[in-house]
Length: 298
Image 1 (cartoon, rainbow, N blue to C red):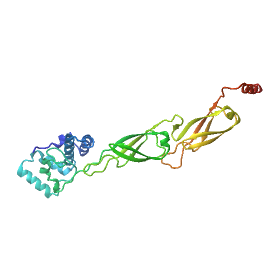
Image 2: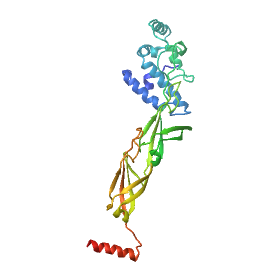
Image 3: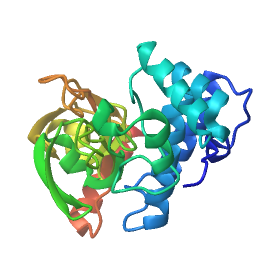
Image 4: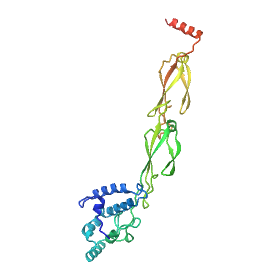
């Protein structure tokens, strides 16, 4: 049963502070976490070693005892005396985090640890570890992003059904608590982060919560005025065209833009640019009438 150098396991020296221990532990625990290394026995063993080192070095009483007797743990009488003094002082046989190095039994501590600090059954506890966070990308059309709707997608072999709120933006990330990987030793699940990617719509340009589009109107309606129908995400809208409307005239339709995220019933505005169509394939009579108009203007 070999001595375990916990400082070496964490890659720190004996003068390391408690914060240094925590930083080293967190860095290594993330690297060797079972969720990131499935079916990797070597990583699992390393993960246990890191936890055991943290268990000892992050606990002031255990660390003091380890520093004093660790390398001399086989010195029978002196070691047993230290053990007895440790227990009489109120120390628990175990008490904190997790551990590594030596012979392990599916998450148990090493033989060295149990010999020095007592078996886990004598008062220790298993460390609970939060599951890993997961990340996913979700593609939406702009029309889909306009409406609150449920959508199912698959991640890590699991079907997940979520409700997507109207008004979500391109590149927006949301957190779904508890939908990440399972925790270790009964620890809480991680979270799921979803990033939305919204494809641009050639008809409606989105800027924030406002939409921009264009509407073709014939020359006669532009000159004389009238009405035109515009198809929007929210349905058809009837527009009143003012007489003598010029090309590229912009009309603002208040509240007809994109829904504001998580503000039910609130919308941005819709800006419509008039695109006046010049008639073609004119008859001789139509050309004659246009010529008369031109002469009148002169």
